[in-house]
Length: 438
Image 1 (cartoon, rainbow, N blue to C red):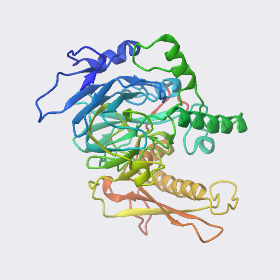
Image 2: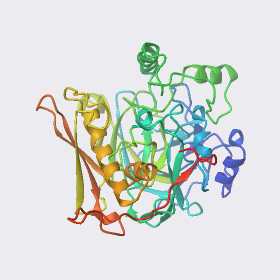
Image 3: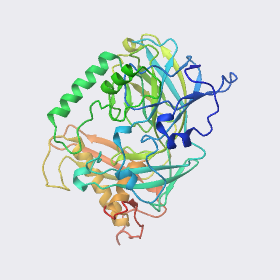
Image 4: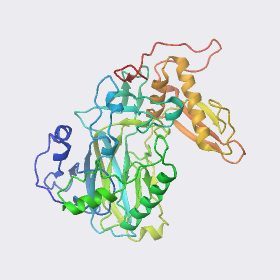
């Protein structure tokens, strides 16, 4: 492996990052014996741009570990208030490790990535789930709930997660990268910016914003580059909040240990970046915006190349083989949602699966509140736990049907409906703002 930094010991890498982000540099251990893996330590990138040069290079077939800070860049702490969620600076996200070039990859090829492992740092066995303020990201129900900051801290013990802020649950996680992908070409980057800036301009007063355009504030590439190049990257680089044709922030929970990913290559070397690691996440599309169990940790990868793969596979966007490893929860309580705003003004929508999904989630939240959870706790739990969602029907106009299934086995008590009703428990509250507003 070739890198642009001196080889050095990096045992205090994460503590150093928390103290001074601007001083972080990627460092790599010396080449190990052939049966060991390389360890890449976080060259932080905020933004996506083909002008960011690779910071390290791997050979096809080599196994390597990449250390990742959490997606906010260590802005969130293991504490009992949500003030840090309220005040999070979204210009500094996502914090990614890379770019990592793969020798021999050329535009038009397919980069094949095997995900061999995803795990938290041994000295940081915790993660968090957050509800963001309406004006600062919000979430699926930002407007309906007039969202105020809240969070849950999760203790990670092997494959299991528990939380002092959402008592009564314990579940197995499926750890995965929320964000992983190749670098765009200059032409593709221009296409992204044109279409997304156009959307922003068409919805200039939207709260929360419909998208985030290029923004030099908070842009960070973790390398000593010529000032004019750094300014160009900061000015033009796409924000990494949405997924796009290269992969990116798609938050697919089954891209875990044992998954294989097929990415289109747009630039020489492919220039892979990865980050935003999650310990667990439901099929709830991160409904609370910061909706997985976010963590800092290590991902183990192996890369290979299929020449001409874009043409061979009609590869417009990535293709994935999900992990064969999944928590075994056989019994689930399933909530249905239709494209009618039953929880709002009763408006009928025509085949709107998003409306249907939101109604299923609101039905589940209402049920969990009967058990004794607060609305915030229920919102966070549905985001973080191994909840499954499926589209049931998209042809029976006017109502799309979407389901949300909660595994009953994650609870320490019986949650099934009974003739005498549901026992309500005192389950406290999650971490809220220090001013008490929630």
